[in-house]
Length: 238
Ligand SMILES: [Mg+2]
Image (tube, rainbow, N blue to C red):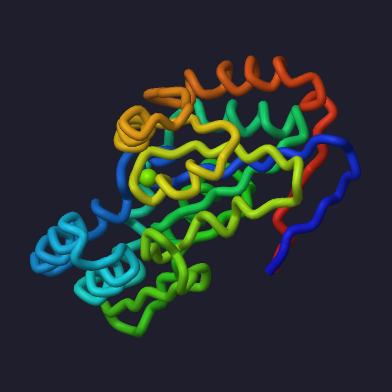
């Protein structure tokens, strides 16, 4: 996998947006587990919160506890709502020539279906939910990295690796965003990410929804004259 520039302008900007709790109004993985997993998933969650296991191991064990048919899962996903202001954020990015990629430590089946249902044709990178037949599932990690500081399923920092001069914008809400936010030139943060940024002295803008993020990004870009001429820095299709 790699990145390719489709424009040779002076200023490139890569916008990485988290999914659960950021685009989706809820944490869809938690909701799915509450709905379909054996209650032992909560014990696994506690082990992760206590730092005894990384998020990759946490999700691997939790998804193994899920009992749902594909039909049940897809019906569940059909009820997931997104921040109603997110499409306007995407429209702003498109108008300014900024490439948006959804980076999620959640499930590709959920992320893809929710984006499609809302007419959002965006590249996304998430963990791979594989159907084993019947009501059984297994989680795969096509974007895991052995040296990931957060032991994430999807190591988001790899998507922040960019040619010199590239401006990285991260929008997120949770622990899976902490590392990649520390690499970014602009951090737009909700919830736990905003608290983490404040506590660690990381420059950021705190928001509660994309209704605030869109004018904020527009104003920030306006202060960077080159950004008006920004080129795509697009994730290449695999
Ligand atoms: Mg999140």
